[in-house]
Length: 220
Ligand SMILES: *Cc1c(COP(=O)(O)O)cnc(C)c1O
Image 1 (tube, helix red, strand yellow):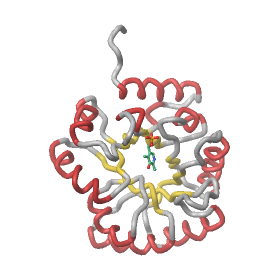
Image 2: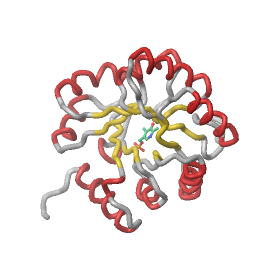
Image 3: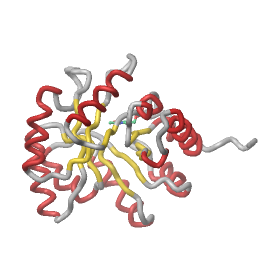
Image 4: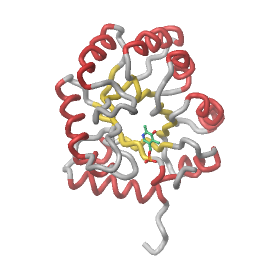
């Protein structure tokens, strides 16, 4: 083991060891490689190493970058991890395989309509504003039951909850809270944990971790 491991190999090893500590199986945890701001040339080596699930936070950027990569590499999955405007719902449903950012009632109708039109069911996480931060996206906890009810009434394929906890403070209580909310609402997916805190998220039940800078380096 003198060879320096690739960033991807290192993250995989850290996921495996966090899963072991949590007495979970590593293959219950999906690594979403968040490639926002990074060009196709930075993404291709990860695909070559076997990474198949990627995340982007802007529809337009993804539209510019991904169709060619998806065409060239079978089995690549693209997840939307950033805020979605209703007028981009149709584009998002056509390009993405999973949406982590359903965060408001008006988006339920837009997504349902877009999925109908595209004849394509795209699994969705509901994003929760877990730290009740004014500037942050996500549904307020108090409004979560109504949003989930609306999404279920519209027959959207809901798979879980997603959060981005407040920066610079211990994230564990927020991950634990998201885990409890998901359990209370009968949802199995928990999209939580990023480069700085994915191991903690794995201890607290993350099923999808969204890792960017630890794989691709810092963004500008
Ligand atoms: C950018 C981003 C990430 C990845 O963040 P890193 O700290 O670079 O790992 C995860 N989730 C969301 C919603 C993001 O926008």
